[in-house]
Image: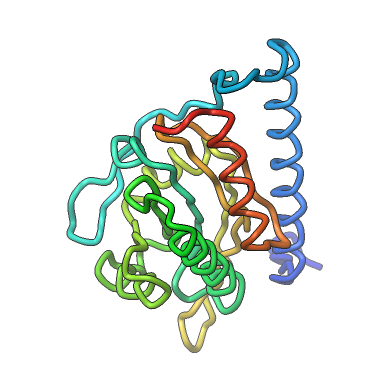
Amino acid sequence: MTANHKMSIPPKVILIVLVILGLQLGFGLQQYFSHERKKTGPPAGNAVPPPAKPLSDFRLIDPRGRPFTLANLKNRWSFVFFGYMNCPDVCPTTLGIMQQVWHQLRTSKADMKQLQMIFISVDPERDQPQQLQDYVAYFDPAFIGVSGDPDEIDKLANQTGILYGYEDADEETGNYIVNHSVQILLLDPQARLQTVLSPPFDSATIVRKLQSIRDNAGKI
C-alpha cells in the first residue's frame, strides 16, 4: 500500500457508527435530563420541570426563500429530523413515522397550531427549498422543509448532537451518499431541546412521549 493510497470505508460501516453515536447521544441527553430533575426533585402537579437544553440562533431558508431562524421554533412544539431527499431508506421511513404521529395527533383533536414537523436537509447543494418542500408535502402538506448554508446547518446540528458526512461521489453518475444521525428531536415552545427520540420508532409511543412531556412542562 502506498502512502497516497486512500482507504475506502464501506457506507454501511459509517452508517452503523453514526447510529451508535446517535444512540449514545440520546442516552447521554437522557442522563443529563435525569440528573437535572434529580437536583430539583420530580415535578409536582403542574409545576414546570427543570429547563431543557436551550439553543442559540441560526439562519436557514424556508420553502419561500425567507429566513428560518430560532424564532420559527418558538411558540410551538417541534419535531425535527435531519436528512436529505436522495436518502434511499432511513429518511422516507422516518418521515412516514412522523406522518403517522401527525395523523394520530390530528385524530386525537390536538391543537395542531401548537405543533409542527420540520425536515432539515443536510444536502443543501441538491435539496433546493421548493423541491424540498414538495418532497415533505408528499407526507403531509403541513410539513416544513428547510435548507440553507452548510455553516448555518452546522450551527443547529452541532447544538443538538446531530452528525452527518458525505461519501465520495460516484465517478460515473456524480451521485453521493450522505451518512447522518437517525434521531428525531423534540423541541418545546421556548425552542429548547426537550428530548431525543431514537429508533426503532413507534408512532403511538412518540405521541405518548409528547403528551407526557407537555403535561409535565405545562401547555402554552
